[in-house]
Image (cartoon, rainbow, N blue to C red; front, top):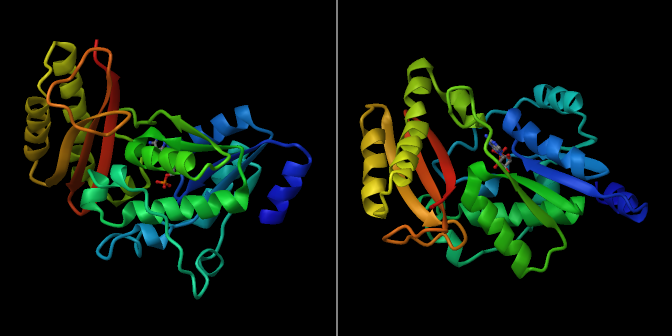
Length: 275
Ligand code: AMP
């Protein structure tokens, strides 16, 4: 892959890159399509990165189906599928990790200690292998995008980070490989994340500016179903990820939710500007 990318670059071809953990859905494909429209060559990687999973998380059972993913990417017209083995990414003796500091201390960083170290490390490794001109990420993982943007800025990486909107099911549930874990009842309950976010958006549109009150109301919706165990409902400044007591006009915020539905941990968010 490194040689292939070096050759493409020598020919002056622009490389677009979509890092994924596979079990692809339309969210991933929207990134592939965007890359195809902006670059000469599109590379998608599939790698379930062990270093971003906590001890008690779902690394072992994360859904994997190479043949399914391969044919989805072929249909989508992705040029190159990069599918590395663990021994190529983290060979024996591997010992380098990347820690982005402030922005990883809250939210997902708080509830999944070490997660963003794994993310920043693998993305940096993949960037060095694939050498993309542009890399595509989903707003679904908003804090992950911010961490990668910070790393790219700090380490002077020569990659343009493109953040694309969340693709949802018809009823509003954000697409995720982990939705496969949900049984029929949980699938219905999972819609509460979208409901809570929509309700909060409505409150803000109707003039509510008190962050804590809106967060509490989102939490109440999540707690109203018995299969749910929320980690957080939080509203943060979309640039700094800082929490502000009162929402301010003209400022953009992420409304963020992380919630377990049964045994499945889901995240979702809305990005909005207060008028
Ligand atoms: P994953 O395979 O879950 O690591 O995701 C790979 C990339 O796809 C990440 O940049 C995600 O943010 C993005 N992604 C995941 N779900 C969605 C979605 N529903 N809409 C848009 N992008 C998504």
